[in-house]
Length: 324
Image 1 (cartoon, rainbow, N blue to C red):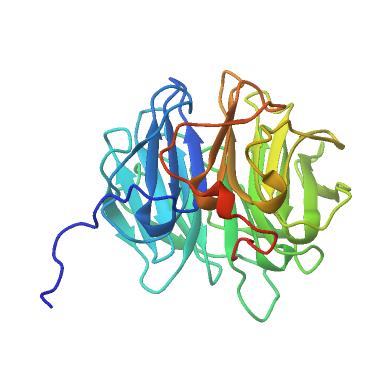
Image 2: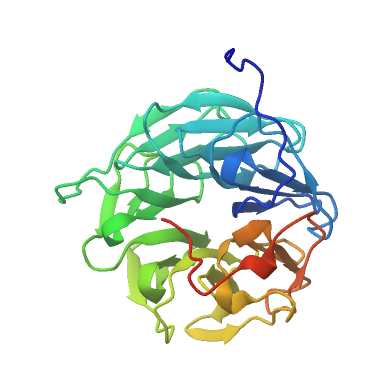
């Protein structure tokens, strides 16, 4: 067979989704398996397919205020789009490394993280990327970093395997480890100003906050369950969190958790939610298994399945769970 030289075809298929980003103007991008890209122009109510140009798993996606979008893949790609997510190009590649998360503080400064403790930093809007590292990690094996939040041009927080949470205050010249070997693997982070949450395996939900001395404090929040928590987002004011995972979707305020209302036609108890987002206007979107997109006007719900094309929710079973 001749080698395939062209871009990967657009898939109109219910690929599992992990990434979701909402723009200030109501546009949205969702990403997932087999290079899946879904696009919405109306706050997540109706969706069409984009063209990523790759068959890689696109794990997370972020949208810059200036209109560019970035995503990361399990084959070490950082991809960028300048046209609202319709087409993408690879702007950086880490051979042999799984990249799991990406975030920008502004149109210039951003970080991406992944396996083997990899941390990548850009100060020029993604045109070039420099490798950084955890400064005082003591473990034998470098952690798979699964989440990063860029707070400003100099400050960021990352989290991942072995319960690692690390922060930088000098644009990544040093990454100080805050916790390790205390909590299970952490899979996502959300921080607004000086407060936020981290989520992970075995029902792990952690509250993060800066104390008066500028030191991050971490404390567990009881969730009452052991389902893996895969994604977390915060409202623009930081007051309300949305958490998704294996069979769960709930809101969190302080240490108070409440189930989000989900339409009965989507069997949440037999599915997983891999990505969540809250827009500046308060609308909320959750994406996950079978290409499902759930949308609500507020984080508390009710969440209704959006018009995404085919997704096989009827095939979900109790044993269908997300691979990590």
